[in-house]
Amino acid sequence: MSFQKISVKNIRIGKRFRKDIGSIQLLENSIATLGLLQPIIVKQETSGAFTLLAGFRRLQACKSLGFEKIDAHVMGDKK
Image 1: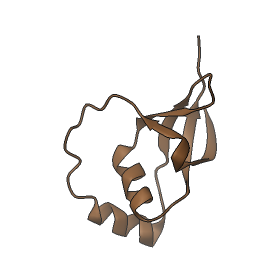
Image 2: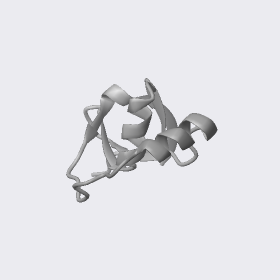
Image 3: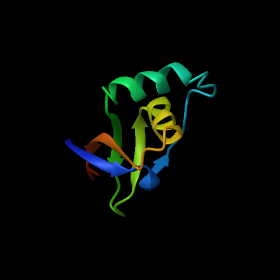
């Protein structure tokens, strides 16, 4: 697993188990004040695209705040 700053536009949302993400306003306020303290987790596919594994609410909050890139722990595609 590596740590990277990746473009939010290159992140695909995989199958989600949580249907309702609730209000993310408090999370947005926290990220705006303190920054993103816990990076999201993505898997890098062989195509080079990224699939989100954990951190959907954090990703949505960062997008809402206008982030173009986000801190992520990147897991490689292991076959």
